[in-house]
Length: 487
Ligand code: BES
Ligand code: MN
Ligand code: ZN
Image (cartoon, rainbow, N blue to C red; front, side, top):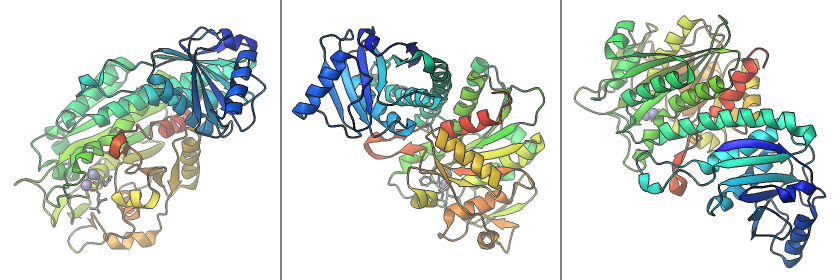
């Protein structure tokens, strides 16, 4: 979807040329900033009971005398916060995308001045509504109908709206890439495919890509990544992607879990919903999406993406419970449960990250079912021992409407990872599973400024809406932009 803005006046809203005019009404009172034709239509609809000024309500009116656009729709927002506007816009776009128009103009009434966050909310709502998965389902139809959104605004708001749309469009491009890759089935999106996609991204966005194969991974000594990969006939990859926007500043490093299918390995998962484990590379997809967004915005920051990627499969060659492997850090790990594979591939990537002398390292992983139990599907789990980093990531999540919640990392939680046969065990008991997974990773971060995002509950949706969400590309992009100089 293409996003534009157009400065206008209240009266001129009615003469906007577009296939549809979507009017968002913010708040429970009929707004004062509507042209006469729309005020009349709104009053009639309220009087007849066709519309109530309650969040979530929409009304389609079709053609309206005195309005140039051949389709008019209303969507009601609880208030004028970006969060509430985004949900009303999502409802409005959902209604319009079933109709014939391609270009929708949007007027937000009753909200007062619009700022960059409002414009960004429009872009992300539009991007979500217009994404269509077609890679293995061409019968889903041609590319989505809604192709362009124009946000109408006042002259005074023009600069803020324009920069918000620009940021929003970059995030949409990143989220769309992340959704697309994560949605691809495991037999299509293999570690090799993911590496190819990273190389393609590097070409289009002028990044530097390096892809290590099994031999090179062996030479480096990533014994934990290799242990997970050894049960599969798909070879592993270790992807390094660099965006240079700031001479030789220390980079922000993002590490994404890239398990292209997680069967559990010898500690095999139950059959129900196992198909969803194709999404177990959602962290990796979000790293690629964030690189795309940051590069599109030409942010003055250095950013490196690290993606350890492989399949987790059972076979005669597979790693077994009780096996001890040696990680890149030199620490030995007793693999008590082969289904706790994410932390194994991540610990080698975290040890590798140390070599880049980063200013900060953030790993993103669909790591634990326990995190889904703790936080559900709304907030991602945030784990970090550094208070200022926790605050910055929390703020980024709120600003992007892609929220997270900080979880504890007390040293007491580390006890359960003791092993009689290795430096560390890869699992503890069920209780506190999201935290002990983070404690495992923490052992491999040394003196790094490090945070871990567990996106097991937020990277995809189940049920009728099954599909990747592209989270936490928004959060990460906001965080990285806040680290950039002069932006
Ligand atoms: N990829 C899964 C985590 C997961 C599970 C994400 C369910 C989303 C929904 C991860 O590799 C895993 O299997 N974790 C285990 C860890 C356990 C063996 C300690 C889990 O959460 O059950
Ligand atoms: Mn697993
Ligand atoms: Zn997994």
